[in-house]
Image (cartoon, rainbow, N blue to C red; front, side, top):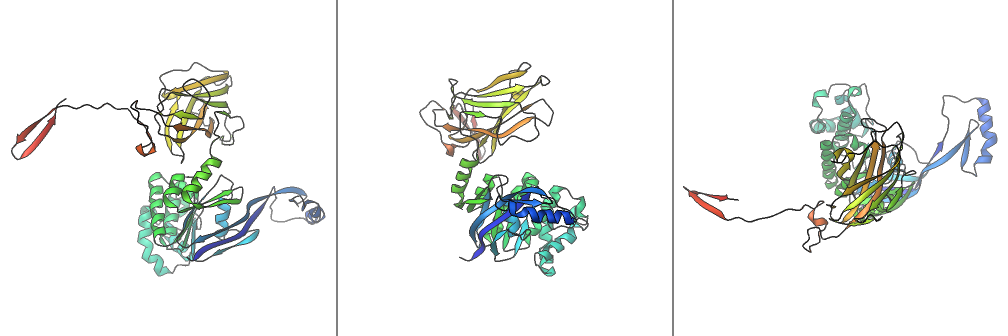
Amino acid sequence: MQTAICVDKLSKRYFLGERTGAYRTLRETLTDAVLKPFHLLSGRTCRAGRLSDSHWALKDVSFQVRLADVVGIIGRNGAGKSTLLKILSRITEPTSGSAKIRGRIASLLEVGTGFHPELTGRDNIYMNGSILGMRRTEIARKFDEIVAFSEIEQFLDTPVKRYSSGMYVRLAFAVAAHLEPEILIVDEVLAVGDQAFQKKCIGKMADVSRSGRTILFVSHNMAAIRNLCSKVAILDQGRLTFLGDCEEGIARYLETSGASHKAEIDLTVHPNRRPGCKRIFRKIRVLDSMGRPTTQVPCGQPMHFELSVDVPAEMVDLRCGICIADSLGTRLFSISTTLSTSVLPPLVGCQRLVCSLADLPLVPGQYSLSVNGGPPYQGDSDVIENAACFEVIEGDYYGNGRLPNAAWGQFLVRSEWSAHKSETYNNHADQLILAQS
């Protein structure tokens, strides 16, 4: 099959701490020339007499994408995903290597990419289409579909500088998807839209892929990647570590980038802590029904989460919560001090908080948990996403010897069934069956 994208040893290097300005003095230029030989070997450079570290956003990335492939690009923040898309979209130049594109590209990388803020939505549709290489007659033919999809007809003749971020996304995606590019590149920008519009965009991209066009899709939503993509590419610290089957790629990514699979996790240096928060969490432990640290809990059995916290003296009204998510990151349920029948006393200093579940209602599988805690109604609470993970294994949840599995759904619910004799009444031609209990 014909190749749509061919990337060969693509690399992109940035200099950290580099000073940019409108001009440089003769002294700065001479200083750079003198110091440059001393820093080349160390991978550092000197800008205006100041050292700058270099960072390889991409390093020797090579792959091919065939025509009509839908490839999901996944990886941690800073892995090089957006840099790769910007190079493919011809927004930035690579430091070395090459990227050959066969076909017309439409890219949606940032909110309002390619829009002129002073022009109306109507004008930007025509301008964006022209940038993509469309003739005016082609744009006019698709115009009504674009407006209907974006759902902003009321604001079509309003300058886009007055649009909200959601309206930007709606119009930008509608233009990119409806003007029939051979290659569609979409970044995580869809996360800005509301849930209904995100679902609509996923459906549109599925339609685009079925029409024989190529899609590169960057997202942290593994469910969307699984539903849309046929292949997955994993980037890790600027290098391509996997390109292949979607299910296998997602499994590899979750294994390497998920929460620590340990019974006891040190939270003081956890990489997923939200910046700028008041740190109170120190450690978390997953405990079985006997209070022993574990990473595996049978479904239906009691389990406990133990949080070690250090509460400053001024924080006496502490609220804590734990959110459980499945292997794709879908949040299943939350448990917190505000949703509990028990009331915690005022806490100060080092404390151990234990949250107990009488019976775990989850089917076998891998799960992660996030924690949050702090004073109520304040934005600086301590939040750690994917703080830890645990595995739910088979257990006799119903007490009848039948072991539940993932095919039964996400949750296990106990129920009672009974049978009662019914009476049948004939009313003209109709038959009414009344079950009496």
